[in-house]
Image (cartoon, rainbow, N blue to C red; front, top):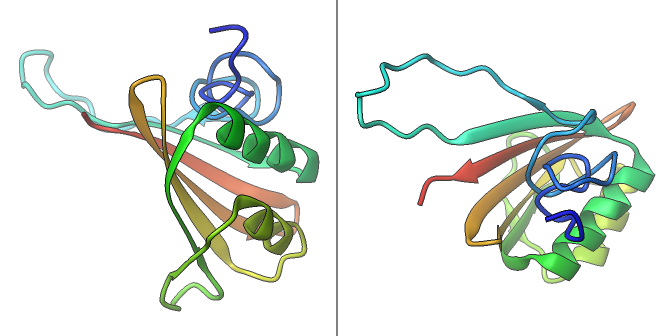
Length: 135
């Protein structure tokens, strides 16, 4: 997986420090969830989070476009607004770095897994919360 960055460009696991699509590096840390007994039969989603600067955000979008299969992209102008469908990732990237929108969600597939990245604009960059969706 070292040659593929989507599930790992820093945010995820394969290796580019900064903004990956699926594992864990210095940028995105695992979020601790509830503890279940091993025999419970319940599978929890894998969750990671971090804050990306503009360069890391650009790497994330490039990785998703190159290595993933985008299923759906939505954006919100304000926290309580209705999500709008976005047709192209470059359009969404520009709106995020210019802080013209509140946030976005990108649902995609990478290496037989489904992922949901939620991006929220902050003064210091974009907060990324990544969830590996259950099979």
